[in-house]
Image 1 (cartoon, one colour):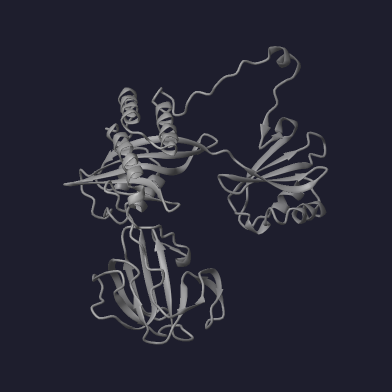
Image 2 (cartoon, helix red, strand yellow):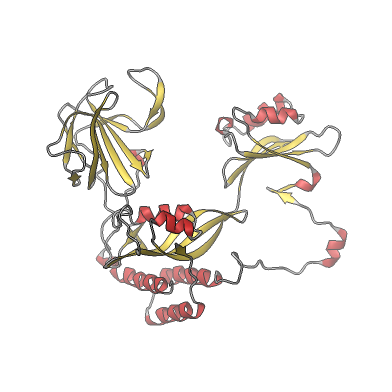
Amino acid sequence: MAVITQIKNIKILMSFKNLLYNIKLFRADQIIICILFLTLYSCRNTGNTHPEPVVMSADTTAAKDTAPREFLYGIPVDSFNQVAGRIKPNGFLSDILMKHGVSMTDIDMALKNSRSVFDVRSVRSGNNYIVLCDRDSTARARYLVYEHDPTTCYIFSFNDSLNITPYKKQIKRTIKYASGTIESSMWDAMIGGGLHPSLAISLSEIFAWTVDFFGLQKGDGFKVIYEELYIDDKLLSTGKIYAAQFSRTGSVVTAIPFIQDSTESYFDVDGGSLRKAFLKAPLQFSRISSRFSSSRLHPILRIRRPHFGVDYAAPIGTPVHAIGDGRVTSMTIESGSGRMVKIQHNSVYATAYLHLSRFGDGISAGAHVKQGDIIGFVGSSGLSTGPHLDFRFYMNGSPVDPLKVDAPSVEPISEENREKFEKCRLVTLSLLETIN
């Protein structure tokens, strides 16, 4: 079970002071480390999850003359009656508004005036809404607040102006630190320790190339300094990972964030990248004939359905290469996909290669491949109008657009950045040492 640990204030204070005394940091480094330290120090345990708010002295004279008003999304809600609900399946906002006295003409005008702000087709069933109505016999709706997602609301106004205004909720960021020991899996350790599931996902992505999360053993452990995001005092998800460390039998892997060539990546203590690059494409001398889409007209079936891949048009027999190291999980022939090879690259990333004419030599389920190995050849097997490769990319089991996969630089720390990285490394390791 994971145990959320607290950094001893005196220990981290002395560690921080010693580091600044012994190391002449660049100005940017000083700012970053000061912010990180002050945030960590301010989040010390005082019995509360969040720091106590600053209480300003009230003007008692003004308080006698003016009663405090209650605001919601910038609207003085104490002037209205509130009606809350959820969007029903196949429900429409217009149906809700018309029940509260708003004409279809006004609804259409509000939508036309704010066409660039909100697409009414994006309304999701199950989402919350609040209608603010007049406190008179008409009970006409003056506002409708639609909660589109945890961070964004849309305010429909039916007053002198008819429009829709986006409202972004304030995200509060708090630095946390945690450690845990694996009993069965990292997921169970984090859930058992009360940590947000997104933290396990973030760590699995950072350490995807260096830690086999399917092969963790009892007694393996982790430490992490990270950011939690709150909205309305509710934990939303995990934010930035400031430092992380995995301990296994005989080895320790540390993740140190560092910006090189304008891109932030994670590096180990020696300055090597924790991620390996993928090839930009699985074959050469080709062109893209069809892109990733959630609704594409199938060229044979003549119906619209998702196409979760990128089609590369190329002559039959063109070699198809594995875009990265991995293990072949399947080599099959299916009616729609034709000859297909699937490769699991690590615990996060997987790829699939469809419509092959034949498989590469030595390719079979369970075989290990290296980046650039030939795993097959372009063909037109399965449901296909011509020779091409349907290439698919998966992240945590879900299809993603191969052309938009983030492939950060995997170059090690350059000589010109070596001194700066060394200072960041010392600070990061010192902070991780304070976590028990």
